[in-house]
Image (tube, rainbow, N blue to C red; front, side):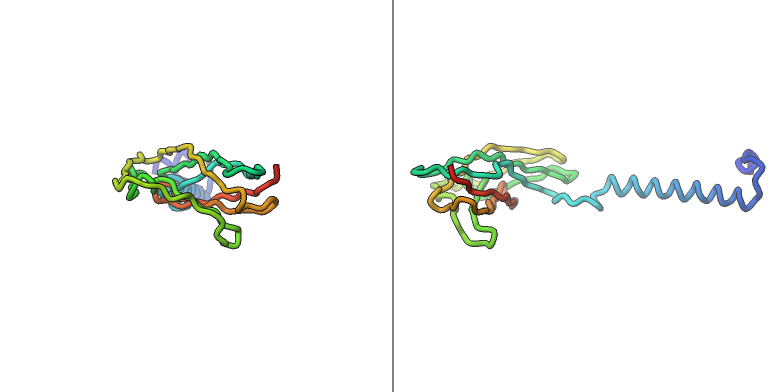
Length: 167
């Protein structure tokens, strides 16, 4: 074999061991590349939601509500476009607040919604975001307590923690 002839003065078993090592290394690199490109070891959900909001909410005395601006994001982690669909405009973003133990604190107020199915397409690998306002009732929150904001954005669920603090 011409390849073996070009190797330095090595014994036959040593040359075979070197060739085997090169083959094993090539197979290992190919498998590592495949694993990276596939979604085999990813912990991302196919359609993932997240929310950006303050870690603390300041309770304003004598206020009827505390407007909390949040940025909700939805990301398509698949290799195909995702069709997003909700039954009404009011179902695009929904939320409620509980204690960490699951005790109900507050939910969004019911609004009159047009009964029109809402659809959107989210291209593969893309992210969409929207700024929303949540009106919290300060009478339902206690300073120093931690709360869980559970939300649904385009039918996908997410959660965020926040702590109520005094003014």
